[in-house]
Length: 284
Image 1 (spheres, rainbow, N blue to C red):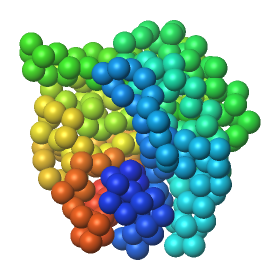
Image 2 (image 1 turned 30 degrees about the vertical axis):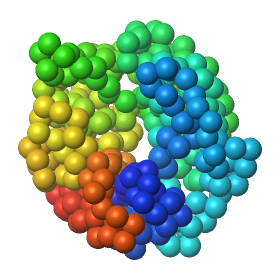
Image 3 (image 1 turned 120 degrees about the vertical axis):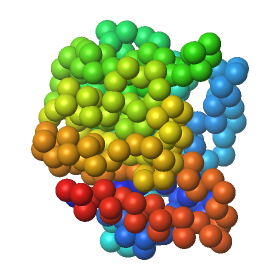
Image 4 (image 1 turned 60 degrees about the horizontal axis):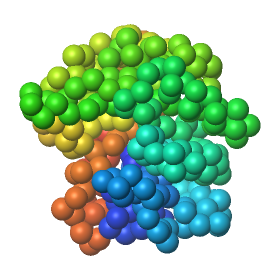
């Protein structure tokens, strides 16, 4: 099993190019192209702000090509990407095609695009089908992801789009296309209030499961921590992945783990992430 990890958390310390270099040197097989810097989103105001990142400018494809070369020069590839969010914003949705283009240019095979958490499978299907023909032309699959909302009264997660096996499969059914797959976020499925588990999700998705976001939590909050540091049972998750014949990448999204590392120490953190990912791969 090949291992990958997101680049956003390391990029905040050392930039995307150095992050990919470190990820390769740490022993990962691939990098997950985080594209959140494409949009500087003001959450309370629900609008985009000015942004000087190359992904937001006219030379975004050149930037994606440069990152691909950095990876290839260091012996790794881009396996998947993550488009900007939240999808409830029409301004964010206007960047989905750009994210798909960048995925293709970087060599990625799957672009994860969040559903609108509060919308139905039918509404989200229309959103996805607006960009699916473009994705096909680019040779990139779109993956939807299980989401969550928060119940402040019960102090736990609550239902959102794709949060349960029934909702996840309903979204896949509504689009019904081989270029539309599932990305299971392991941590989201294990939050208190989710009314499911990662094992139940894997069993229900079966061959529709095309990608993973792997991280650990306390089975309550969305902690996005390094695997084996908290309470998720990865042995039973791997067993279920083996049962369905999962053959995709094992992609970490433990993006909060590197928070307290500095530019000088972040490589040590990335090596720890690689060690955890290899441990999961060894379980296969």
